[in-house]
Length: 457
Image (cartoon, rainbow, N blue to C red; front, side, top):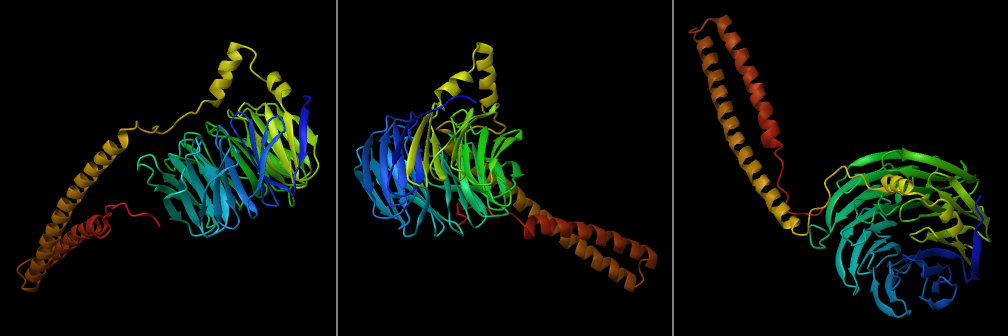
């Protein structure tokens, strides 16, 4: 295994429950169980520590490290800047379970215990809110906030479109699962999403709602992470009935490999931007670094169960937080350099491995939503007119057939038509009538209703 450096270790009050890193790792946000939010630099110095007034449920940080979001169990949502100044507070009315910031920090998605999915702007103003049928612990937003995904304990995944609605929060689709959805991840461009549910399944979908696969794992997933392109998915799995495990999945290939860490839960995972490196922390009091192909590169013992872990985009740095209140920073550069592509051919191969392989149409240019909406509207109008004409034709045909049935029956009664010939005519007319009734049921009684933009809520 590759040698690794523990650069520094700090002790904070209460267990470290959540970590978030800026893109370069120069800003490290950490939430501890005593309700304190800390901001550290990569050199280990504390920029500030602030008591937020209650237990912190979730945090996130912008790519530049200049904006930090915190969701409290009291239901307060806070946004702070890099100096520790509180920019705003918003009362959600229920415990905040998950928060996700857009890359530039301009938008924030929050999931709450009462089933609310909130979308707030940089001033703390609600842009929209949606309601699920159960608590929403898993939320994820794309880098520009064009798309958002939410996982609810009602057993559903919700995918929301801001792109074509000017941040209007239109629901694109929902997917029912067999268990409570607790972890969500989304690719940087919002094209792919992954979810982990309590019935021990991982789901992988795209923004059009296409389910690529669902994969059963041996126990309940405890942590989930996705590479920037969405091609690589990492999962930490609970211990207990089965050993704790780290599993790595590929968008097309499904499960690539799994690594058993011991009896205890793997409660934290993170990936480098290209998915080449995976960091994990377990309740065995160990931190691991894996390579996508080479598997385990190193593992280090720490003091306390690892409940939070974060990795820089380039994979050079791993930060881990433990339940005993310890924050560790590890230097991965020796491992990263060893497995960095050495030749141009190697580099091209790595790029081909991690390049997104789109199977559905990419988002349209900025001007496209209005045009697409107009085209859709025109298509719906055309379909509506076609259905109306078909209704009239079917109705007229039914009336004609009914008239012919009555006439043939009358001629049989008065013996104008031979009885056998009359019965044959009646049978043929009944067959025609059955066919017309089928058309009537399919295109009239069950005619699709045009949407007026009504939300699923």
